[in-house]
Length: 83
Length: 83
Length: 146
Length: 146
Image (tube, rainbow over all chains, first blue to last red; front, side, top):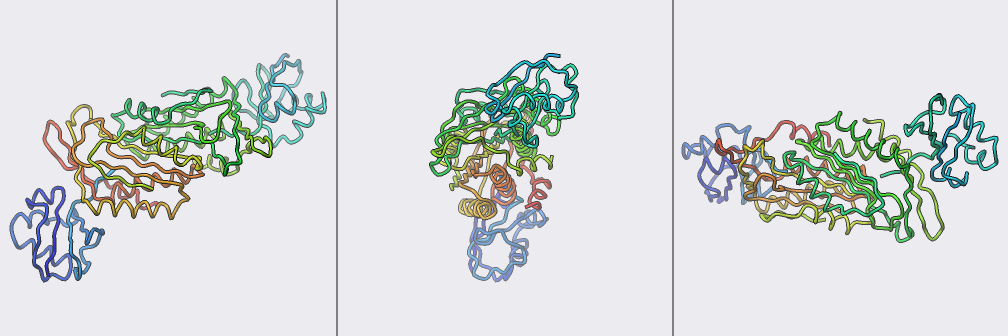
Protein backbone atom coordinates (compact mmCIF):
# COMPACT_ATOMS: atom_id res chain seq x y z
CA UNK A 1 0.00 0.00 0.00
CA UNK A 2 0.98 3.65 -0.46
CA UNK A 3 1.55 5.84 2.61
CA UNK A 4 2.57 9.46 3.00
CA UNK A 5 5.21 9.90 5.69
CA UNK A 6 5.89 13.25 7.35
CA UNK A 7 8.94 14.15 9.42
CA UNK A 8 9.21 17.06 11.83
CA UNK A 9 11.92 18.90 13.78
CA UNK A 10 15.24 17.02 14.06
CA UNK A 11 13.76 13.92 12.37
CA UNK A 12 13.06 16.07 9.32
CA UNK A 13 16.58 17.49 9.48
CA UNK A 14 18.33 14.12 9.86
CA UNK A 15 16.33 12.46 7.10
CA UNK A 16 16.63 15.55 4.94
CA UNK A 17 13.05 15.89 3.76
CA UNK A 18 9.70 16.93 5.24
CA UNK A 19 7.56 14.31 3.53
CA UNK A 20 7.65 11.41 1.12
CA UNK A 21 5.30 8.77 -0.21
CA UNK A 22 6.39 5.16 0.14
CA UNK A 23 5.09 1.80 -0.98
CA UNK A 24 5.09 -0.54 1.98
CA UNK A 25 3.82 -3.93 3.05
CA UNK A 26 4.33 -3.11 6.74
CA UNK A 27 1.33 -3.94 8.91
CA UNK A 28 2.40 -1.91 11.98
CA UNK A 29 4.33 1.30 12.65
CA UNK A 30 7.20 -0.78 14.05
CA UNK A 31 7.44 -2.74 10.78
CA UNK A 32 7.39 0.51 8.80
CA UNK A 33 10.23 1.89 10.91
CA UNK A 34 12.23 -1.32 10.32
CA UNK A 35 11.76 -0.91 6.57
CA UNK A 36 12.87 2.71 6.69
CA UNK A 37 15.92 1.89 8.82
CA UNK A 38 17.23 -0.52 6.20
CA UNK A 39 16.87 2.01 3.37
CA UNK A 40 19.73 4.40 4.17
CA UNK A 41 22.08 5.41 6.93
CA UNK A 42 20.21 8.69 7.57
CA UNK A 43 17.00 6.76 8.37
CA UNK A 44 18.89 4.35 10.62
CA UNK A 45 20.34 7.38 12.42
CA UNK A 46 17.00 9.19 12.74
CA UNK A 47 15.30 6.10 14.15
CA UNK A 48 18.21 4.89 16.30
CA UNK A 49 16.44 5.72 19.58
CA UNK A 50 12.69 5.17 19.37
CA UNK A 51 12.16 6.43 22.93
CA UNK A 52 12.84 9.88 21.47
CA UNK A 53 10.33 9.46 18.63
CA UNK A 54 6.56 9.91 18.61
CA UNK A 55 4.16 8.81 15.88
CA UNK A 56 0.81 10.10 14.64
CA UNK A 57 -1.49 8.13 12.30
CA UNK A 58 -3.79 10.30 10.22
CA UNK A 59 -3.04 13.19 12.59
CA UNK A 60 -3.84 11.31 15.81
CA UNK A 61 -1.11 10.44 18.32
CA UNK A 62 -0.59 6.69 18.25
CA UNK A 63 1.73 3.82 19.27
CA UNK A 64 4.43 1.94 17.43
CA UNK A 65 2.46 -1.30 17.64
CA UNK A 66 -0.65 0.26 16.05
CA UNK A 67 -1.85 -1.36 12.78
CA UNK A 68 -1.29 0.56 9.55
CA UNK A 69 -4.30 -0.83 7.68
CA UNK A 70 -6.25 2.03 6.10
CA UNK A 71 -3.82 4.71 7.32
CA UNK A 72 -2.93 7.33 4.72
CA UNK A 73 -0.62 9.66 6.65
CA UNK A 74 2.09 8.65 9.12
CA UNK A 75 4.06 11.36 10.95
CA UNK A 76 7.26 10.93 12.98
CA UNK A 77 8.52 13.59 15.32
CA UNK A 78 10.27 14.17 18.66
CA UNK A 79 8.34 14.81 21.91
CA UNK A 80 6.36 17.99 21.49
CA UNK A 81 7.43 21.30 23.03
CA UNK A 82 4.53 23.69 22.56
CA UNK A 83 3.34 26.42 24.88
CA UNK B 1 -8.52 54.37 77.58
CA UNK B 2 -9.71 55.98 74.35
CA UNK B 3 -10.27 53.77 71.28
CA UNK B 4 -11.46 54.58 67.77
CA UNK B 5 -14.02 52.03 66.55
CA UNK B 6 -14.78 51.54 62.84
CA UNK B 7 -17.80 49.72 61.43
CA UNK B 8 -18.13 48.41 57.86
CA UNK B 9 -20.84 47.04 55.59
CA UNK B 10 -24.03 45.97 57.39
CA UNK B 11 -22.47 46.60 60.81
CA UNK B 12 -22.00 50.22 59.78
CA UNK B 13 -25.59 50.37 58.53
CA UNK B 14 -27.13 48.77 61.64
CA UNK B 15 -25.18 50.92 64.06
CA UNK B 16 -25.72 53.96 61.87
CA UNK B 17 -22.21 55.40 61.84
CA UNK B 18 -18.87 54.55 60.24
CA UNK B 19 -16.67 55.41 63.21
CA UNK B 20 -16.72 56.70 66.75
CA UNK B 21 -14.29 57.21 69.60
CA UNK B 22 -15.17 55.60 72.92
CA UNK B 23 -13.74 55.60 76.41
CA UNK B 24 -13.50 52.05 77.66
CA UNK B 25 -12.02 49.97 80.42
CA UNK B 26 -12.41 46.73 78.43
CA UNK B 27 -9.27 44.59 78.35
CA UNK B 28 -10.32 42.34 75.47
CA UNK B 29 -12.39 42.67 72.30
CA UNK B 30 -15.10 40.49 73.87
CA UNK B 31 -15.36 42.90 76.82
CA UNK B 32 -15.57 45.85 74.44
CA UNK B 33 -18.39 44.16 72.52
CA UNK B 34 -20.23 43.53 75.83
CA UNK B 35 -19.96 47.25 76.69
CA UNK B 36 -21.24 48.26 73.24
CA UNK B 37 -24.16 45.80 73.43
CA UNK B 38 -25.45 47.40 76.60
CA UNK B 39 -25.34 50.92 75.18
CA UNK B 40 -28.27 50.81 72.75
CA UNK B 41 -30.57 48.42 70.96
CA UNK B 42 -28.85 49.01 67.59
CA UNK B 43 -25.53 47.81 69.05
CA UNK B 44 -27.16 44.75 70.59
CA UNK B 45 -28.70 44.01 67.20
CA UNK B 46 -25.46 44.49 65.27
CA UNK B 47 -23.54 42.24 67.64
CA UNK B 48 -26.29 39.64 68.17
CA UNK B 49 -24.43 36.94 66.20
CA UNK B 50 -20.68 37.17 66.67
CA UNK B 51 -20.08 34.26 64.30
CA UNK B 52 -20.96 36.73 61.55
CA UNK B 53 -18.57 39.41 62.81
CA UNK B 54 -14.82 39.79 62.24
CA UNK B 55 -12.49 42.14 64.10
CA UNK B 56 -9.26 43.92 63.20
CA UNK B 57 -6.96 45.58 65.74
CA UNK B 58 -4.86 48.41 64.31
CA UNK B 59 -5.67 47.09 60.81
CA UNK B 60 -4.64 43.47 61.47
CA UNK B 61 -7.21 40.67 61.57
CA UNK B 62 -7.55 39.48 65.16
CA UNK B 63 -9.64 37.43 67.58
CA UNK B 64 -12.32 38.38 70.08
CA UNK B 65 -10.19 37.21 72.97
CA UNK B 66 -7.24 39.38 71.94
CA UNK B 67 -6.07 41.98 74.52
CA UNK B 68 -6.87 45.64 73.82
CA UNK B 69 -3.84 47.10 75.62
CA UNK B 70 -2.12 49.62 73.38
CA UNK B 71 -4.65 49.26 70.57
CA UNK B 72 -5.78 52.54 68.99
CA UNK B 73 -8.13 51.37 66.23
CA UNK B 74 -10.69 48.55 66.45
CA UNK B 75 -12.72 47.63 63.36
CA UNK B 76 -15.81 45.41 63.21
CA UNK B 77 -17.10 44.00 59.92
CA UNK B 78 -18.76 40.96 58.32
CA UNK B 79 -16.72 38.23 56.57
CA UNK B 80 -14.93 39.80 53.64
CA UNK B 81 -16.09 39.40 50.06
CA UNK B 82 -13.36 40.79 47.84
CA UNK B 83 -12.23 39.59 44.46
CA UNK C 1 5.42 44.35 42.47
CA UNK C 2 2.48 46.72 42.63
CA UNK C 3 -0.80 47.06 44.50
CA UNK C 4 -3.46 49.55 43.49
CA UNK C 5 -6.76 50.15 45.26
CA UNK C 6 -8.78 52.65 43.27
CA UNK C 7 -12.26 53.96 42.47
CA UNK C 8 -11.40 54.49 38.79
CA UNK C 9 -11.93 51.82 36.15
CA UNK C 10 -8.78 50.15 34.84
CA UNK C 11 -8.00 48.77 31.39
CA UNK C 12 -7.47 45.03 31.89
CA UNK C 13 -5.88 44.46 28.47
CA UNK C 14 -3.55 47.43 28.79
CA UNK C 15 -2.51 46.22 32.25
CA UNK C 16 -1.87 42.71 30.88
CA UNK C 17 0.33 44.04 28.08
CA UNK C 18 2.27 46.43 30.32
CA UNK C 19 2.81 43.67 32.88
CA UNK C 20 3.92 41.11 30.27
CA UNK C 21 6.30 43.61 28.71
CA UNK C 22 8.12 44.50 31.87
CA UNK C 23 8.70 40.85 32.84
CA UNK C 24 9.77 39.46 29.49
CA UNK C 25 12.60 37.50 31.04
CA UNK C 26 10.04 35.52 33.01
CA UNK C 27 8.43 33.48 30.25
CA UNK C 28 5.11 32.73 31.94
CA UNK C 29 2.40 35.26 32.77
CA UNK C 30 -0.95 34.42 34.40
CA UNK C 31 -3.73 36.94 34.90
CA UNK C 32 -7.13 36.79 36.55
CA UNK C 33 -9.92 39.30 36.06
CA UNK C 34 -13.18 39.46 38.02
CA UNK C 35 -16.19 40.97 36.26
CA UNK C 36 -19.54 42.12 37.72
CA UNK C 37 -22.04 39.45 36.66
CA UNK C 38 -25.44 40.75 35.70
CA UNK C 39 -27.29 37.62 36.93
CA UNK C 40 -29.47 37.41 33.82
CA UNK C 41 -30.19 41.10 33.86
CA UNK C 42 -31.46 41.26 37.45
CA UNK C 43 -28.40 43.06 38.83
CA UNK C 44 -28.49 46.81 38.36
CA UNK C 45 -25.17 47.58 39.98
CA UNK C 46 -22.78 46.90 42.79
CA UNK C 47 -21.07 48.96 45.46
CA UNK C 48 -17.77 47.90 46.96
CA UNK C 49 -16.85 49.19 50.40
CA UNK C 50 -13.34 48.80 51.76
CA UNK C 51 -11.20 49.71 54.76
CA UNK C 52 -8.65 52.27 53.55
CA UNK C 53 -5.27 51.60 55.07
CA UNK C 54 -5.99 48.03 56.12
CA UNK C 55 -6.79 47.08 52.51
CA UNK C 56 -3.34 48.03 51.28
CA UNK C 57 -1.69 46.36 54.28
CA UNK C 58 -3.63 43.13 53.77
CA UNK C 59 -2.91 43.01 50.04
CA UNK C 60 0.80 43.70 50.64
CA UNK C 61 0.95 40.90 53.20
CA UNK C 62 -0.76 38.49 50.79
CA UNK C 63 1.64 39.44 48.02
CA UNK C 64 4.68 39.07 50.30
CA UNK C 65 3.49 35.61 51.27
CA UNK C 66 3.11 34.63 47.59
CA UNK C 67 6.64 35.87 46.83
CA UNK C 68 8.02 33.75 49.65
CA UNK C 69 6.22 30.63 48.49
CA UNK C 70 6.91 30.83 44.76
CA UNK C 71 9.63 32.14 42.48
CA UNK C 72 7.98 35.23 41.04
CA UNK C 73 9.49 37.80 38.73
CA UNK C 74 6.59 40.17 39.37
CA UNK C 75 3.05 40.42 40.69
CA UNK C 76 0.25 42.96 40.35
CA UNK C 77 -3.04 43.44 42.21
CA UNK C 78 -5.60 46.05 41.13
CA UNK C 79 -8.90 46.27 43.04
CA UNK C 80 -11.66 48.81 42.60
CA UNK C 81 -14.05 50.20 45.20
CA UNK C 82 -17.18 52.34 44.95
CA UNK C 83 -20.03 51.89 42.46
CA UNK C 84 -19.70 49.40 39.59
CA UNK C 85 -22.07 48.56 36.76
CA UNK C 86 -22.75 45.04 35.39
CA UNK C 87 -20.00 44.02 32.98
CA UNK C 88 -17.41 46.28 34.62
CA UNK C 89 -14.16 44.80 35.85
CA UNK C 90 -13.89 44.60 39.63
CA UNK C 91 -10.28 43.58 40.04
CA UNK C 92 -7.36 41.74 38.51
CA UNK C 93 -4.19 39.98 39.56
CA UNK C 94 -1.19 39.13 37.42
CA UNK C 95 1.84 36.97 38.20
CA UNK C 96 5.02 36.28 36.24
CA UNK C 97 7.54 33.49 36.66
CA UNK C 98 10.03 31.43 34.69
CA UNK C 99 7.73 28.45 35.20
CA UNK C 100 4.04 28.33 34.48
CA UNK C 101 3.28 26.17 37.53
CA UNK C 102 4.57 28.91 39.85
CA UNK C 103 2.69 31.65 38.01
CA UNK C 104 -0.59 29.67 38.15
CA UNK C 105 -0.23 28.67 41.81
CA UNK C 106 0.67 32.19 42.92
CA UNK C 107 -2.24 33.77 41.01
CA UNK C 108 -4.71 31.32 42.51
CA UNK C 109 -3.23 31.83 45.99
CA UNK C 110 -3.51 35.62 45.64
CA UNK C 111 -7.15 35.25 44.58
CA UNK C 112 -8.05 32.87 47.40
CA UNK C 113 -6.55 35.12 50.07
CA UNK C 114 -7.78 38.35 48.55
CA UNK C 115 -11.30 36.90 48.47
CA UNK C 116 -11.53 36.15 52.18
CA UNK C 117 -8.76 38.12 53.88
CA UNK C 118 -8.74 41.55 52.27
CA UNK C 119 -11.28 44.01 53.72
CA UNK C 120 -13.70 44.47 50.82
CA UNK C 121 -17.47 44.07 51.02
CA UNK C 122 -19.85 43.92 48.09
CA UNK C 123 -23.40 45.22 48.07
CA UNK C 124 -25.65 44.35 45.15
CA UNK C 125 -28.44 46.53 43.85
CA UNK C 126 -31.22 44.76 41.99
CA UNK C 127 -34.89 45.35 41.21
CA UNK C 128 -35.65 43.53 44.49
CA UNK C 129 -33.57 45.97 46.53
CA UNK C 130 -30.12 46.01 48.08
CA UNK C 131 -28.26 43.18 49.73
CA UNK C 132 -24.76 42.54 51.03
CA UNK C 133 -23.05 39.64 49.29
CA UNK C 134 -22.49 36.85 51.79
CA UNK C 135 -19.15 35.12 52.14
CA UNK C 136 -19.26 31.60 50.73
CA UNK C 137 -18.05 28.58 52.71
CA UNK C 138 -16.29 27.34 49.57
CA UNK C 139 -14.09 30.45 49.61
CA UNK C 140 -13.08 29.88 53.22
CA UNK C 141 -12.44 26.21 52.42
CA UNK C 142 -10.21 27.21 49.49
CA UNK C 143 -7.68 28.71 51.93
CA UNK C 144 -7.01 25.36 53.58
CA UNK C 145 -5.09 23.91 50.67
CA UNK C 146 -2.26 26.45 50.88
CA UNK D 1 -14.61 28.92 21.80
CA UNK D 2 -11.80 29.73 19.38
CA UNK D 3 -8.48 28.27 18.31
CA UNK D 4 -6.01 30.19 16.20
CA UNK D 5 -2.67 28.90 14.90
CA UNK D 6 -0.86 31.70 13.13
CA UNK D 7 2.50 33.07 12.04
CA UNK D 8 1.49 36.68 12.79
CA UNK D 9 2.04 38.31 16.17
CA UNK D 10 -1.06 38.80 18.32
CA UNK D 11 -1.91 41.56 20.79
CA UNK D 12 -2.20 39.81 24.17
CA UNK D 13 -3.90 42.74 25.92
CA UNK D 14 -6.38 43.30 23.10
CA UNK D 15 -7.20 39.58 23.13
CA UNK D 16 -7.70 39.69 26.92
CA UNK D 17 -10.08 42.63 26.69
CA UNK D 18 -12.06 41.21 23.76
CA UNK D 19 -12.33 37.86 25.52
CA UNK D 20 -13.42 39.40 28.85
CA UNK D 21 -15.98 41.57 27.10
CA UNK D 22 -17.73 38.79 25.27
CA UNK D 23 -18.07 36.62 28.41
CA UNK D 24 -19.20 39.26 30.88
CA UNK D 25 -21.84 36.97 32.32
CA UNK D 26 -19.09 34.62 33.42
CA UNK D 27 -17.52 36.62 36.23
CA UNK D 28 -14.08 34.97 36.24
CA UNK D 29 -11.48 35.18 33.46
CA UNK D 30 -8.04 33.56 33.59
CA UNK D 31 -5.37 34.08 30.94
CA UNK D 32 -1.92 32.66 30.38
CA UNK D 33 0.71 34.11 28.08
CA UNK D 34 4.03 32.50 27.12
CA UNK D 35 6.88 34.82 26.19
CA UNK D 36 10.21 34.01 24.48
CA UNK D 37 12.84 34.24 27.25
CA UNK D 38 16.13 35.77 26.22
CA UNK D 39 18.19 33.66 28.68
CA UNK D 40 20.26 36.63 29.85
CA UNK D 41 20.76 37.88 26.31
CA UNK D 42 22.15 34.61 24.91
CA UNK D 43 19.07 33.75 22.87
CA UNK D 44 18.92 35.47 19.48
CA UNK D 45 15.65 34.00 18.34
CA UNK D 46 13.39 30.99 18.14
CA UNK D 47 11.67 29.09 15.37
CA UNK D 48 8.49 27.15 16.00
CA UNK D 49 7.63 24.29 13.67
CA UNK D 50 4.21 22.68 13.71
CA UNK D 51 2.12 20.06 11.94
CA UNK D 52 -0.61 21.92 10.03
CA UNK D 53 -3.90 20.08 10.29
CA UNK D 54 -2.94 17.95 13.27
CA UNK D 55 -2.21 21.06 15.34
CA UNK D 56 -5.76 22.34 14.99
CA UNK D 57 -7.21 18.88 15.65
CA UNK D 58 -5.10 18.38 18.75
CA UNK D 59 -5.95 21.82 20.16
CA UNK D 60 -9.67 21.28 19.46
CA UNK D 61 -9.56 17.92 21.24
CA UNK D 62 -7.82 19.49 24.24
CA UNK D 63 -10.37 22.28 24.38
CA UNK D 64 -13.29 19.83 24.08
CA UNK D 65 -11.86 17.84 26.96
CA UNK D 66 -11.59 21.00 29.10
CA UNK D 67 -15.19 21.93 28.34
CA UNK D 68 -16.35 18.49 29.43
CA UNK D 69 -14.43 18.64 32.69
CA UNK D 70 -15.28 22.18 33.79
CA UNK D 71 -18.14 24.60 33.42
CA UNK D 72 -16.71 27.09 30.92
CA UNK D 73 -18.47 30.04 29.34
CA UNK D 74 -15.68 30.39 26.79
CA UNK D 75 -12.09 29.42 25.98
CA UNK D 76 -9.45 30.74 23.61
CA UNK D 77 -6.15 29.33 22.40
CA UNK D 78 -3.78 31.35 20.20
CA UNK D 79 -0.42 29.81 19.21
CA UNK D 80 2.17 31.22 16.84
CA UNK D 81 4.58 29.35 14.58
CA UNK D 82 7.57 30.47 12.52
CA UNK D 83 10.36 32.82 13.68
CA UNK D 84 10.05 34.67 16.99
CA UNK D 85 12.36 37.19 18.64
CA UNK D 86 13.20 37.34 22.38
CA UNK D 87 10.42 39.12 24.25
CA UNK D 88 7.76 38.20 21.69
CA UNK D 89 4.65 36.36 22.80
CA UNK D 90 4.52 32.73 21.73
CA UNK D 91 1.00 31.81 22.70
CA UNK D 92 -1.88 32.48 25.06
CA UNK D 93 -4.89 30.73 26.49
CA UNK D 94 -7.94 32.30 28.11
CA UNK D 95 -10.80 30.68 30.02
CA UNK D 96 -14.01 32.10 31.45
CA UNK D 97 -16.36 30.63 34.02
CA UNK D 98 -18.81 31.66 36.72
CA UNK D 99 -16.34 30.33 39.27
CA UNK D 100 -12.67 31.16 39.47
CA UNK D 101 -11.66 27.61 40.46
CA UNK D 102 -13.01 26.27 37.13
CA UNK D 103 -11.37 29.03 35.11
CA UNK D 104 -7.99 28.42 36.81
CA UNK D 105 -8.14 24.62 36.52
CA UNK D 106 -9.20 24.70 32.87
CA UNK D 107 -6.46 27.18 31.92
CA UNK D 108 -3.79 25.09 33.63
CA UNK D 109 -5.16 21.91 32.03
CA UNK D 110 -5.10 23.51 28.57
CA UNK D 111 -1.50 24.58 29.13
CA UNK D 112 -0.35 21.18 30.39
CA UNK D 113 -1.87 19.35 27.43
CA UNK D 114 -0.90 21.92 24.86
CA UNK D 115 2.71 21.72 26.09
CA UNK D 116 3.14 17.97 25.56
CA UNK D 117 0.31 16.88 23.24
CA UNK D 118 0.02 19.54 20.55
CA UNK D 119 2.50 19.13 17.64
CA UNK D 120 4.77 22.14 18.10
CA UNK D 121 8.56 22.01 18.25
CA UNK D 122 10.83 24.85 19.29
CA UNK D 123 14.30 25.50 17.93
CA UNK D 124 16.48 28.07 19.63
CA UNK D 125 19.09 30.20 17.92
CA UNK D 126 21.91 31.52 20.07
CA UNK D 127 25.50 32.65 19.65
CA UNK D 128 26.49 29.00 20.25
CA UNK D 129 24.35 27.77 17.34
CA UNK D 130 20.98 26.13 16.92
CA UNK D 131 19.32 23.52 19.11
CA UNK D 132 15.92 21.88 19.41
CA UNK D 133 14.30 22.48 22.78
CA UNK D 134 14.00 19.17 24.59
CA UNK D 135 10.77 18.09 26.23
CA UNK D 136 11.02 18.25 30.02
CA UNK D 137 10.06 15.32 32.25
CA UNK D 138 8.25 17.77 34.54
CA UNK D 139 5.89 18.65 31.67
CA UNK D 140 5.05 15.00 31.05
CA UNK D 141 4.59 14.51 34.81
CA UNK D 142 2.19 17.45 34.92
CA UNK D 143 -0.33 15.52 32.80
CA UNK D 144 -0.74 12.83 35.43
CA UNK D 145 -2.68 14.98 37.84
CA UNK D 146 -5.63 15.44 35.49
